[in-house]
Each structure stands twice: as C-alpha cells, then as structure tokens.
Image (cartoon, rainbow, N blue to C red; front, side):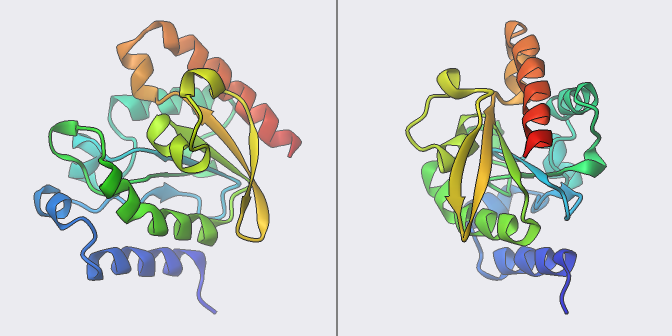
Length: 191
C-alpha cells in the first residue's frame, strides 16, 4: 500500500511531467511542494514561494516564515505539527503576485495535496489562497473566522488569516494576526 509521502512524491512528479506553468518553472530554482507532517490536522496554504523558498525548496523559510514560526509558538505548536504549502509551487519573478492563470493551473495539484493529507482544518494565509475556498470574501471582513465547506465527501474547516508578510509591512496587523492565529488554534482543538 502506498503511503502519503509516496503519494506526495508522485504528485510532485506529475507537476514536473505535465510541465505546469513552464514560464515560471524556467526561471525558478526549485519546485516548492510543501513540507511538514503529512498526517497533520492543520494545513497552511500561502500564495507562492519567495526568493529564500525558491533557493531552498521549502515553503515559508524567509522573514514571513520566521513570523509564522512565532505564531505557531504563540499557539503552542511547531512546524512538525502542521503541513505548509502554497497555491503556486514556483516563485513568480520579482516576487509578484501569482496570476489567475498560474493559480488555476496549480489548483488540481493543491486539491490533490489536501486529499492526500486529509487535514481537518485549512488555514489560508492571505487573500490568494483564501479565494479558492471563499471566492467572494474579502480578507479584511473574514480574517480569523471559521467557515465549513464541502470538500470531497466530507467537510473542511477553513480559517482565513492575513499573510504573515502583511504584518512585516504593516506593524498594526502583527497583533491581529497573532490573535487570529491563537483563536484558530483554539477552534481547531474544538473540532
């Protein structure tokens, strides 16, 4: 029987074999699939890798990742408790936002990642990943809330949060993000 890690490796191979977003792939150093606990109850989804992530092939290891680690610690968790990924698996040039076409191209692979891991909770980091699950929502209105959606044959709890990078650029969001994060951890414990 195939295990989750092997399934995720096959998924990575499928992205490469299917030449998803060749223009992004051609300028990226690494395909950044995700990392963490493949049996995690919580999956974090960001938008796309940044420079450091592209260099090392791991998500959220730059400045935003350090803040994510701080938030995990505030909520009594660590990276090994969760799984972290992005919608788009290659770094967009000049750290631009991923395009609609790029997000659409990677959507089936993101959804397959979630089917493999089978989390109870998905915490979206920023509006790009939130839009997949809550298409008409505005992050300023829904951040920190919890929303049940149908996913496959079951329900999935979606908790949208601001992207950790937003707190780096806007100091007033830092405490909001920490508070939302701690609240999200408590909501997860009740599930």
